Length: 290
Image (cartoon, rainbow, N blue to C red; front, side):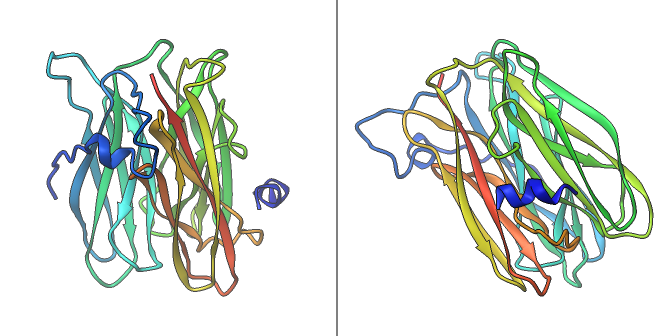
């Protein structure tokens, strides 16, 4: 892992559709939201992750009432547990769906939710994938994915090739440091075996001024703690993506993502820190209108 980069950053599926009020909470009611065409947030509820297993979950972007296809602008996972050893292994787009794998290394069953931020494909919509990034045993590896010229990042993610519960997602965010043209992922491999992962960026065209902004909020994460923070979107924009970059300067492989998902009025994330060292992270929201 490039420590200088971090130092600089220092079940069943059910659609849960948010109302405009919920999505825009905290913004000025005098300024109405401006959404991408077909904008919709959906959630796959309460997928069971049995103790000591890796579990898959997914959610599809539904077609519009008129039959037009929706695609994922971004997505995420929320693990419904305070356990510091229940982590996100993978979170990534697949066609019109969002997929996730959760590692439950605890001694109790937990549930998790999979989220997708959906919309009609805008001009230049594409998913760029970098496959087969090496992830040696006992190491952390990163992989940036650049969007094509003229496009901006909407979201992104990573697919681990490993079923080992010690291989987890450490970071997934627009980067470096809120960069609008790249998605950056880091994977931790605390297992005894080398593996690989794929990294993805979801890209589309947006105006060079107005209608698209990335906001960041810093948070602390004390030793032995699971911590939450969120970054806002302000009207007339709505959240279309987001993620987390951690400030773990020691490259501790036990510090991993517990959740990254669209929250009311922005993007939220939780990080597990079972280590004996205080750390911190930055949450980014990607906000856009039409």
